[in-house]
Length: 243
Image (cartoon, rainbow, N blue to C red; front, side, top):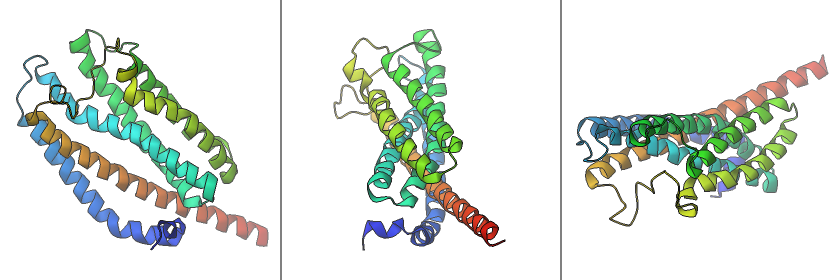
């Protein structure tokens, strides 16, 4: 079995429709367990107090905001190289999910930053690059909507996706590039001194797993919707030609 079999819209729809119920249920269960565990069954941090618990929303959403763009980059490159329409539609389908994840990360970061930094916003390298990534998401979605020819739109958005990947990388590694930034380092690290305590990291892992499955479920669902919408447009165009 080759992965390219799923470039066939019928094969893709048939497969995703089988696995989506499991994805919906699993993601809902993991997110519910992770959030309840994190918000109600973990102690306050000795320095941050109860505000530390924002990580159970902030970290998973930030993770998916960045990785959603990388997923869009990969599927866009597949479109450019192999011209598989499903990959282009998958990239388009992921963009609204990514922009929501980015917005959640920005809002929860501001909620955390106000008591910790004394301000809702700071022009920190990571925050700034994350805001630019959010704007790239909006531009990507707008570009798809602005161009009538779907192949041309896929080509141009693929270029935009490649450029925006620079800010996705900066959003992830800005703390390493610029040490003077306010934003803390990674909450999860192989370095025991930097990694958050197990009492926080364990429910955080559960939340992250739930967000990953939710993202996959949403992308599968939205890609299926895009495929069906394209089929409907093709049928309408055919009927007009025959009329």
